[in-house]
Image 1 (cartoon, rainbow over the protein chains, first blue to last red):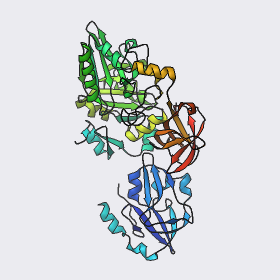
Image 2 (cartoon, rainbow over the protein chains, first blue to last red):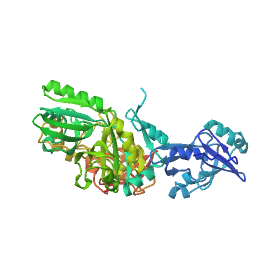
Image 3 (cartoon, one colour):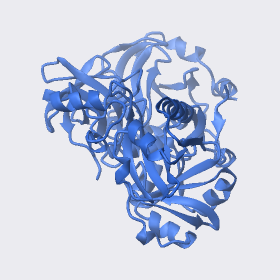
Image 4 (cartoon, rainbow over the protein chains, first blue to last red):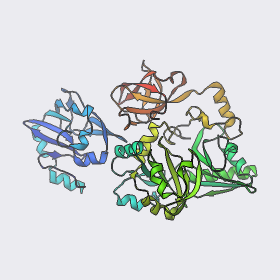
Length: 127
Length: 363
């Protein structure tokens, strides 16, 4: 099975992605990450208004077997969370880059996004 | 030391199984999806490579006495071709193992038994048997056949229908916990109506060299240890290392909820300690946990009463694929071990509401 790595967003080593959405940054996990985790059954996210810090855990994702931290690709204030994941965590498996997004932030350093790995750099890390 | 490989290892790799080390063996966790494999076993049929389980044969004039004195159940009640569940306890009544014992033969030369220790424990159990045999001066052979025998579990409501055309015997005559010597896919096989999923099903012991052909002949969903774990948890079955372990979680079989496998009328190592536990009541008891708040109980999490006082510990937990509810098992103080009792589980420093459930979760 080949893994999808769209080049319209940035990635970090711990397999989260970050994508610019009109000044806000949307965050989720990569196709590789959801495939590694297997059947996702639970997602825990911060509340809107909370601050998340770059490279630190912002939430938790659980598969049937295991619990994993979610790491923030960049810091900022949470402006939206994907509440649909509370009822349908399997969306992260099905559409990691679309319906399985996790949260949006107002980044404290808007330039930080461009410093993250590109799709080809991330693909290089997976190889 | 490198993880050991079952005779089906190459097939698992070829199917793209995700592998993990368990009990010193390299085993498949899942072939495709734990949820899908779990569903196959609950509603149809699935097959598991469980060749990591140990197999020890005990035979001779004193085999019955040796088995009786080292296991918690009453082997003298076992007819030939029947199996029973038992605990193996130390002098303090602490569980070293749980196991299934089958009486294979009973004749003028004595009896022959086969028991199945958990993965990685065959050597320690074989030496426990020979040490006690020698200390007690008993006449019995102890033969660790773990490296000769492969085990394949076929589990699920359709398992009899799937196996019937492959097996020489009439499976309708094989009762729960019965064992027959037969042939499956023209291969000699010891077949038992046993399992670890809470479903009807069979466990097949075949020669190591025949395992591959038998596995291929059984045409159903291959399942890994991930689904085996969620299935046994829904069925309320113990897992060594989680619900009991002589070092990390010392428990006696009464608090672990398997008193049905303890016969205090027999004489065995640990019996006197267990008689005391039975008389005084265990300090804690194993219970089912069903979450009412958002969160999944996991091994090691604290269990509290409604006021937040710690009353126990989670031993296993997951999102139940069958019930789509977060469930677990754990030990709580005996006075709290009442079904529907409101409790909380401490998940990442937050108390999440739950209630106590009687086991099993899924019948």
